[in-house]
Amino acid sequence: MDPARPISPHSALAASPDLAPAQAGELTRPAASTGVGYFRWVICALLLFGVTKNYMDRQVLGVLKTTLQHDFGWNEIQYGNLVFYFQAAYAAGMLLVGRLIDRLGTRLGYALAMAFWSIASMAHAAAGSFFSFAAARFALGFGEAGVFPASIKCVAEWFPKKERALATGVFNAGTNAGAIITPFVVPWIALHWGWRSAFLLTGALGFVWLIFWFLIYRKPDEHPRVSQSELAYIRCDPSEPITKVTWSALLQHRQAWTFVVGKFLTDPIWWFYLFWVPDFLQRQHGLALMKIGLPIMVIYVISDVGSVAGGWLSSWLIHRGRTVNAGRKITMLICALCVTPIIFAYRIESMWGAVLVIGLAAAAHQGFSANLYTLTSDMFPARAVGSVVGIGGMAGAIGGMLIAQVVGHTLQWTGSYMIPFVMAGSAYLIALFLIHTLAPRLEPAKIT
Image (cartoon, one colour):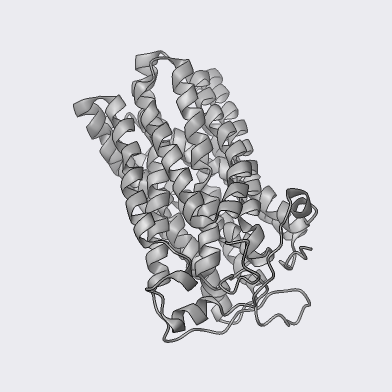
């Protein structure tokens, strides 16, 4: 968002126009829309492809875990340390890059992040030791931290409040799309051209995306493809003044801690799926590298459905008369309950039974995450969203650092996935309880 402008009419982050519910401070549903344009969904598609590329880059390590451990002689703790270094950089990047995107704006900020992490991904191909591989992993984590602050800020600029959860669910489906594509493409590249080519080619895709980003992306009020009716629809939420918001000001509000707690508890579970589920299937069910693609695809296809369905369900509840508070939290409760069967995944003897249980849990995570991200724009003005998402993302990455150590040491000492799956099954109910305790009505933060 351009800080030089006195008003941000395209912001969709102020309070809903119907801010007079039965209980003071609680958000209600906006009016439905008819007859507006659709170009905002083209922008959403760009975000979808950007997130897909992001997750392809980060999942190459998980797919090639067995191959790299063989070539480099890593044990489980060393592999966990590689994940830890990525998460440490991701945590630092979330804090710094989120703030940078708020200052530079979505177009330039996202482009710089994409270029940086694509180069870092390609740098893995030159690694010849644990140290050089860890350095490339650290750089990748720092650059990749920009994807969600930029994407959430973009949704805030291009979508009114009533569509944000759905738009977030759509672009967030890219996490699953990337995780589906990678187990098919990477083993084939590694088999024919070596594992170094896998990092090189997936990383280079970022520069293809950048061409489309610079050709297509503009702010909605500067874009020639946006009709007046669509622009009016995007601007339908009340406008807000632009002022600088400091981190210290944000952290004074319990609304910020609501997002931070949710990310700290649930993000590590997704990292666990991403970096260890391929190994779980290979170790527990004897799958070879070239056969890992189909089960992983099934898990993330199911997960994709959860991402879009979670965003759709809360939007549907709001359109049906529920408050924003009720719509978000009812959806998150359903998702949290759907995760719990994964506690028993390590005991399931059928490979496809385990795949379906993990897929359900991954889908529930994505639905929960889509609504968790949207809480930032429910409770904070547009000028603060990138920073809030960055702070929360940093908390999630710190949680990812911790789970990397827990899983690595647990596998090295016990060889069992029991403890990680128990943690995965219980995290979401705990997170939702704390979210509701901190923000029982999702009142907008009063930023001054």
